Length: 161
Image (cartoon, rainbow, N blue to C red; front, side):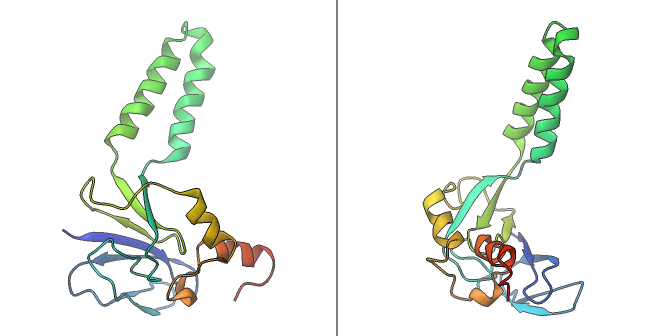
């Protein structure tokens, strides 16, 4: 099964899309042309970009769409005796139930799509997230983890690499 990988380019920070097939050895940034070696390919054991073994799974659901459906239902509710609210929340629940899952790296926020349901990593764990966010744990190839929680905090503090 071919996996789709989305990550931030370590050289310029722009989004990169790549496929993880057996034999994939690198991904190329369309913006700057930088090549990123992807030593872990075709598996969900570790992040293909930064090598982090801490991944979590969540629904690949468009959150603004879900909030928009709920808001439309609530705004139109008084005029439809709340039938529109129930219908919009029901539609939101059906859409959430049918979308596939995405595996996300705690360190660099790289996303992997296309794996079989039930074969991905475990759910989000705030304790693991905080280890990366507050600089207590780092991925093996930390220079490539340019989009994760620690990188954002360093950027906010003006200490980004």
